[in-house]
Length: 256
Image (tube, rainbow, N blue to C red; front, side, top):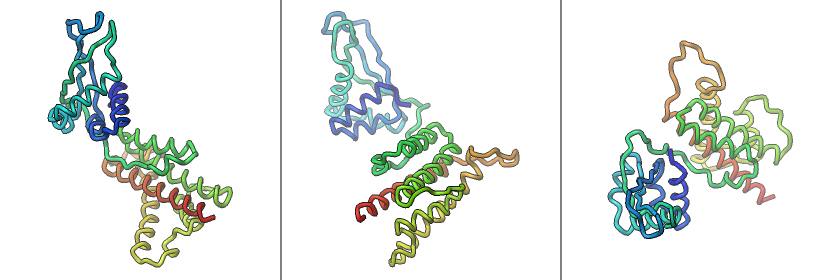
């Protein structure tokens, strides 16, 4: 997992519009190795900034051009400027870490970040964290909770209180009806198929959560545990549908 220095470094690189360099540091960790040599300031110590990364990313980092490596070093020096009695970083060293894993490919939810309901933001963050922590059953639970939350948020803003009794598919149908986004509301056959598919996904997320998530106790005979690819698929589909719901809601509000 990224340590504080890597997180700060990635923020600096993004601020400087060096996203490609920032992305190369995903899931890396760092260490500062001090030498026994004094630097250019009073009692500053010549030091090296070590970056440990997953194998594939390390292979790319060691092939960085001198120009990119210089940009990276300048960013590090913004975090550790040369001062008296402090480390004086003069170079960067790259190492592979075979225990580090690359980040799972989870989609971003740009529009949902604008929503003012903190609980929804919490569910998105929990989905992401639980995938990284390999708590796949927990991620499925939060995927369903995210869909429940966005549906209830939209319905209660558009219509009023909703007597939710745990039937996620019915809740989604009621929300899609008030947003005019059901299959019957469109004439294009292919769009109808896509929108009909969302009902199947909603039903699948609800059922998968009931069968394999941490919301229920498991029978000793149920040896199967949901694996990472299915959990990632469930999280990504849930986030995509939640984003689509919110965009549809915003569009309906602009027409009101």
